[in-house]
Image (cartoon, rainbow over all chains, first blue to last red; front, side, top):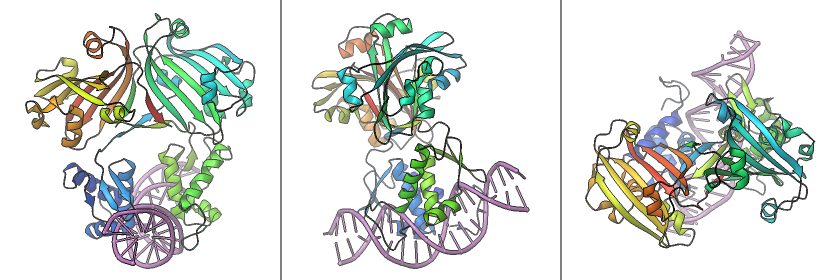
Length: 238
Length: 238
DNA sequence: AAGTGGTCTAGACCACTAG
DNA sequence: TAGTGGTCTAGACCACTTG
């Protein structure tokens, strides 16, 4: 391979050439699903490059789920390729503004209160909770109704009066809460009374529901339920 | 750092230590959003490891969207961290069987036919199309209604009579069509007449809709619309 | 022009696990 | 226990882009 001394047209790196050729062999069934592919050392010899370069290529393939690697056992083509999709979670503001509409936001209420048991269970023993309800608009048309619980044990600053009158809880949290992982669940549900009222829909209208739980390293930061008006589509790439 | 000579308890690699410490500094706002972080060489000196090790750590952070890297410009903490979620797209069979229910499948119809214009546009000039309609059941209860178009120019074998009587189109395609990327869109919609009938629901019931388009390297392979009965949740990790 | 990240190499040791 | 992937190093050259 070219190594560090000479380089050809696409300045993308040699590991990518190995990666792409492996991809081709998998697609062409030269390496069929479930098959064991040659070891790194063999491929390095075939491609005339260092083992680390082959390793980089195969690591990327493993990350995209196309091959499975285990020490001693070797690298196998996955039986079920490409079963992962990457979803970009936009801020609601950006989601609306990229459609060309004007974003606005209206707080319905924010108050410290006790969570119902189902919520409390998911918040893992948080004691002080802030409940926030709000609607986001696209060109003055209701776009999504948001109901959220915030763990004040983790972000006590969120209790400041009037904080969420102008900035949405999500935007404030993104900027002020420590980085975190979390979980998300998507579903469809009929509009409940509060949701129907906030979105200007008939009760029972089909809503796209996003429930999102966000964690700091130590505890749950917030649990949010977003109810989107009909017509909303969430796009992903496979 | 430990290097290759001595190693401590968690046998996970030194790049992960750098990665985790960087994560901590970002979370603790020692490296605030938008800030330029030290160059690889500086971090390598601080951590007492090789520059490649720091590079590996920062590359992983960049892949998860937490930092942005550009040559000469350096590495910056992203303004909007963690905006990606990874979705595992299961086979319907697995999705049902992991709940403990028994999977079954009933073909409603499979026939070569002309696509309506909206479908034809997305299939990018495919000429021969197979239309398939089917229902998937969990313990004899309708779980999802599937309507699918298959590009016979790409997978002519799919036209074989009786093929989809026993195996679902998705499972057959996963095993027999060349590897591909694709797109997916999620939404909520009221049940149309055919969907309501197949799922045993009232017309207008809120359905969770998954539209999936799958590509081979050259052309669109298939376009599918999956309508899930109420109660279905799709889970993701952030 | 200079400094950053991106990549490659050759060699090494280690962790894991199938046979 | 032998062979695989996982990681690390030290050094090097290159591509890119900012100042």
